Image (tube, rainbow, N blue to C red; front, top):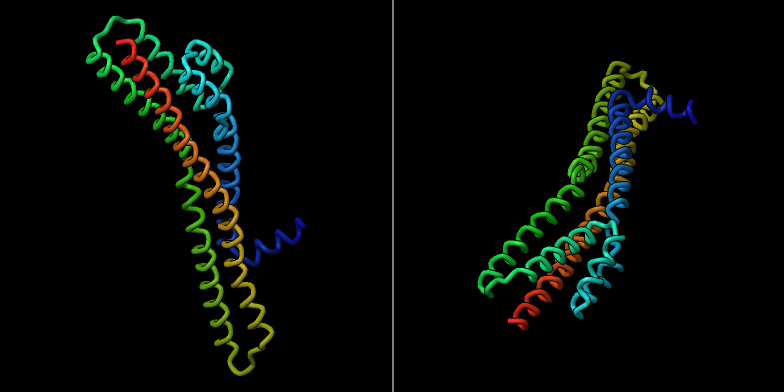
Length: 223
């Protein structure tokens, strides 16, 4: 396998070497993003949904305490919103002042959520660039190989060997195959990451809305 890879690199030339370097970098980024998503527990909202349900049913302290053992991105943001609303509840504020502070709190939590999601989305554009540039690099290598092959054919004149022409063509097409081989799995990874992010963004919006609307209804009832 090592000998085959070495011969492919020699046949493909510098373009295949560039594609190999890009593929190694892409794999490193994909692994790093997978670890990051796993650490943030993206897409795992079971405990958070349960806490929001308890919050809406009036079990506020229990809901907030249950999120202490949840280390997910959504759990941290929802618990921050719950703790801040509970602090507002302890202050003797008029309904108008409370509404203003709660609106500011909602904006702050939303900004924090956007910042965390932006961090999760980092380097995805770089991976997307790999999916776009790899086939183009492969095609570029093929064009260069075809030019070289037809130059050799022209120099050979009437004594040109069809086998030599065929060999030059398949070597030229090798770079296109390598470019596609790099682009396709990276494209699948980018789509998977982006889909998870969109679902996380939608889930955060629903969960935070559930916390704030419950807080607003409780304050109105006490007023």
